[in-house]
Image 1 (cartoon, rainbow, N blue to C red):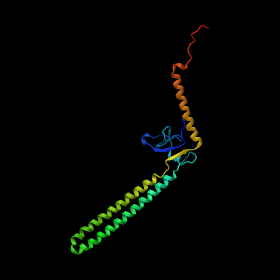
Image 2 (image 1 turned 180 degrees about the vertical axis):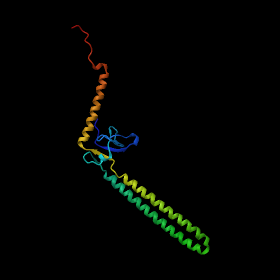
Image 3 (image 1 turned 180 degrees about the horizontal axis):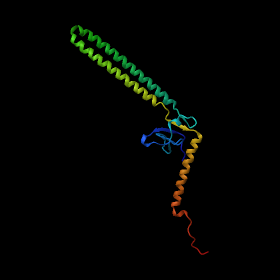
Image 4 (image 1 turned 60 degrees about the vertical axis):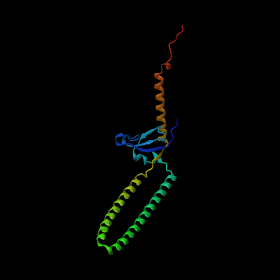
Amino acid sequence: MSVPNIWHHRKVADTAAKGCEICFKPSTSVLVTPEKQDFFYVCPAHLKDRGFCSPIIDHEAVAAKKKKKEMDEEVERLKKEYEEKQRKKKEKEAEKEKDKDKDKDKKDDTDKSESKEGKKEDEATGNKEKSQLDIEEEPRVFALQRTFYQQRLDRKRQAEMAKRNRERLNNPNFFPSVPKGLP
């Protein structure tokens, strides 16, 4: 049973933190194989070390994500333009009504100030979303360097051998039987 040299970076809860495989400091980052055959805890600093592992970058996914981001920005821009046109239209209507009734104009002014406050809140949430997207830009798939990968394979083989040996020792047919015939 061969383990591929593809490792997915996952985060666990702070309460489930265990010692890093390299430096033994508590870590919440885990590298897991795609079939979940093997896993180990590792510090995020080691993931940036090119001597330990290198990221596997899917260029098609990056291009698709970039295109989606551009499309979202275009949609937002068009929405803002449309809202601006609607606002200008309402202002023109309000000016026409201003001549008819001055009381309605006062109410419109308070509505405009409330809509401006809403826009400021929308911009603040947009900035928060952009910062969250930047955080997720870290690579999530890695390939271990040859020596570390070989250590993982050796450790896996040793564990399988130890398990087989324990099973053999528990099996009574493993030991030779006492001779039954006369010498």
